[in-house]
Amino acid sequence: MLILGFLISSLYALVAVGFTMIFGVAGVLNLAHGAFVMVGAYLAIWAFVILKWSLPVAFAFAILGVAVIAPLVYRVLIRPIENRTVTVFLATLLLAVLLEQVIILFFSAKPRTDLPPFIQGGFVLWGTSIPYNRLLAGVVALVVIGLLWAFVTRTKTGKAILALSMDRRGAALVGIASHRITLWVWAISGALAAIAGLFITSFLGIQPFEERVSLVIAFSTVVLGGLGSIPGSLWAAFIIGYAETIAQAFAPEARGLASLVILLIVLTIRPQGLFGRAAT
Amino acid sequence: MKLLEVNGLDVFYGKAQALRGVSFTVQEGEFASVIGSNGAGKTTLFNAISGLLPYQGEIGFAGQKLPSKPHEIVQSGLIHCPEGRSLFAYLSVLDNLQLGAYRRKDREIERDLRVVFELFPRLEERERQLVHTLSGGEQQMVAIGRALMGRPRLLLLDEPTLGLAPIVRSHISQALDAIQERYRMTILLAEQNADFAFKHSKRIYLLETGQIVREGTAEELKRDDYIRQAYLGS
Ligand SMILES: Nc1ncnc2c1ncn2[C@@H]1O[C@H](COP(=O)(O)OP(=O)(O)OP(=O)(O)O)[C@@H](O)[C@H]1O
Ligand SMILES: [Mg+2]
Image (cartoon, rainbow over all chains, first blue to last red; front, side, top):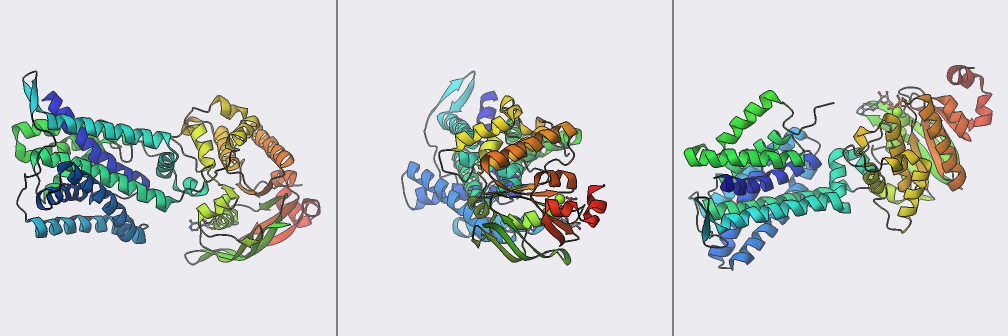
């Protein structure tokens, strides 16, 4: 259970970090983030099951697909209205519903479990059987997060992303083209969501309403960690990951609920979240 | 040669007009100041010039029309060190300074970093420290340093000594003298503190409720009765 919790958590971390990046850099609470997770999964199912591409190609296609769709969403839908916070909020909500419906139209609302594990088999550790696929998911998630960390703290574009999240005016005055950087952030966020979606689907299957669970989890993680704080999201992902794993074991219907309960408790004690910077 | 040429600038906040037909020029190599009290429109003027606010009127820079987007303006060599600093609070001093050179591709970035550290040795001692943990004076040094890292042809400085202790103010004052003497940089300063502006600049513009009401060399305006009474307190 301990290990499974850790492996699941690292996928939640992927979802949450993408969500928090868009909030931190663009100030957008992207309610379609869960839909990006789902679109990634369905793109892979489409490529693998219907087009009969090989599994690695289907995975790559899905990740690239969402990494292209997400910045397009920003460019076409969000950017024209980006100064109107409430409108943006509603637009992302509408987009989430729309994507859900599009998927139902093409794939019906039935759960799909035909995306196979990336690798078969497993092993037993301390009495728990651990499929290799879950191990792989955990490793991939951690490596991706590590790479992302190196990217934002070491490269020039990465630092521009951090700068933009800290002070938009300052960023403009050193010559950072915020719209270009924001496109990058949406692309990265979309790719992370897709990666999580692929693995989650390959162990749990997926259905169109799944995006709501992903969104609730991403949302709780990000608020729990402190809105906009990337280290905060990572810690929160692990807390929520464990809560969800435990909830899953005892009451599978309650998936998504556990995270909300934790969120409620923490926010009552610490309104700015675990790592949030208290408003100054 | 005229480096900056502002012609008939109008800026509105909604229906309220904050600048009314502001026109002035800054010569290459010159230190000029816009003085004016609270709410006169100095920050509005600088924000319009650096592309943060929409305006009507014309702005020419180095003989060409100034581009409209902030990053293009930075690229053309007009760098704005803003009121309130707008630093990247959770990045280190060094990261902040290096981001100042974000648009540059030349090989002299390292050399300019040395120059900034010579002007403000305290920043070198604290290069790894996160900016939000610095004192106000140190933060102002980072803000000026970051602007210098953009290698300005024209540096806009908005109230660089606002709220600072006298000793820090004189330190920054010396740094401005050094920058101007050594690098012949063109500087446009916005100040409420007329004494500070007169000490540094050759040419002065007085802004009152969004309009330029006096202009001239520092020598001339020092003798102007109105300015002496209302701004110089002597
Ligand atoms: N964002 C804004 N929205 C509406 N009005 C504004 C805004 N910013 C400034 N103003 C108004 O425009 C006028 C000029 O303000 P500005 O900040 O340019 O003055 P300033 O000369 O820089 O003053 P200070 O020396 O206090 O910094 C003021 O009347 C101010 O209230
Ligand atoms: Mg001002």
